[in-house]
Image (cartoon, rainbow, N blue to C red; front, top):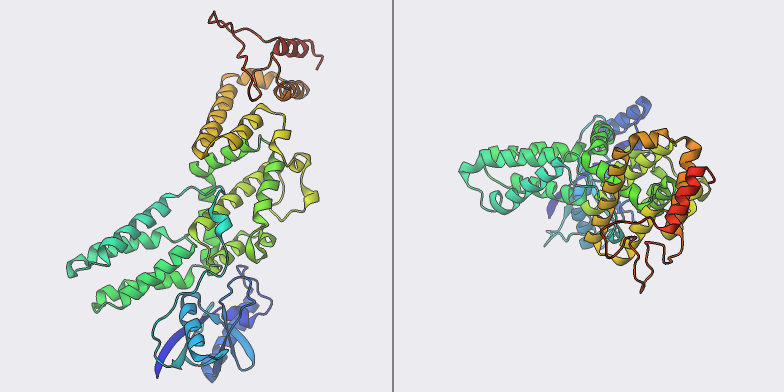
Length: 452
């Protein structure tokens, strides 16, 4: 018989039945957790492991019970092994004995399972279908941290680990340090799997100095979703990303796509976020809870980046609308949030962006969105006094007149051609001199006379 070690985590959930993932535990909750861990350490009860297919966060979760009560779940880095042991046994439950207990806040329990030798450990298929989040969804631009993580991983995976030699210890340490720092806020499936793979490789090396390099990775794996790190994810890291140039550029592009209709943009974001598995939309106002659950839901990097992008766009939208970051109902959205068709928005920007969405490929759409932003930005910078001098009612009249002109059906005097027609660009073909179109001249006269 062979013996296999499994780690039991989440003991604080077993000790506190009303505890919610990601939320801070009270001092009373911590005392109950320490009491449960102390009891397990003192009594060393038989531990029963059983699959928990109804778990909406991880369909392959395995629950641990002892003495008639729930004490936690098999740690995610051990799930593949535990599931393989269950399948090989042909039973629905496994018996394990306690081998180690870490009696501290967010402590854990190590258990030993005796079993016939496993031929291989088959990796599980992804338990949640993330494909919809890996296609045409706005992505959070890579940060410098993520670039450093990925570059270090490339060197480790393709050079140092497969061809490691004794004289490369310092180089190995350097790139492992870069990777650990780079992935400190990477809660994706890929980072978690790579972290476990690096630990396994390092611990298999005979050189003690190399084995010691696994300790920082093990500490990071053990603590990445503990309260201290969750607070850092949800504050320091989140704020820095929100204020970064890349996210601000993403925000400007998103505003253009929605023609400045913030309620419309919020409604579109929520339409996507409501499709998140595990009823995650209900936690939309609790960032730390969402980050913790996304980690434990084994979220792929591309899907994680898409969800983070939408969350950041949503927070920026809520800040500008001066509303709370919370779940919304259909009745909560403003009037422009109920416009489902962009072509119903009678603005020039919306018409240009909508044309790009239907008639252009991805790179052309991005070019159109960037050009529209530049044009609007240049206009506002060139005419600040003109804009500032307009009273609110006059600005509203001007906007109304522009929108009416932009949405007018295409006729000879309109620069927006219908399919198959020849555009009138408003200039004499024989002279390089632009002329004012009749329709635009009439709108200008009315605005000047204060009729509109």
